[in-house]
Image 1: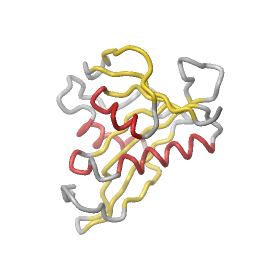
Image 2: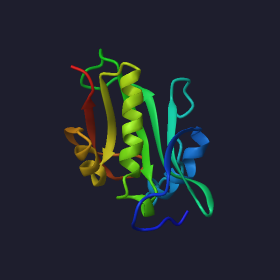
Image 3: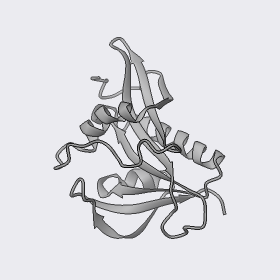
Length: 162
């Protein structure tokens, strides 16, 4: 989809999608410029894993412009509390900065909260840290290099309940 580079996003809708649905957006965003040609995560098809996407209807049809994957996974700094891990958060380049990512993240957090999670956490690229901090996440620990991408990452966490 070649969405407008500026202006309001036409009718964004957060929808449930399949793991296969995530692949094109993940490749375009998360694997661009990296050595990995594989958009899959080992947990993609686990029974409790959920995939969310943002679809936008325009003259060209109904396009998937963002994806995220959510799975129950212990927060490494408090493995006794229920937590949800966010993986594969990706927004097509021409849709970034238009609120699509915030919409998708908020929908996933709402679902995590409804499922009783105390934490939402992710392995965030350093280039995306500001996005997560603006959403209330805290950066935890030292930088590490992700094996699949070769890029610097940090853990980020949002505490939902105290």
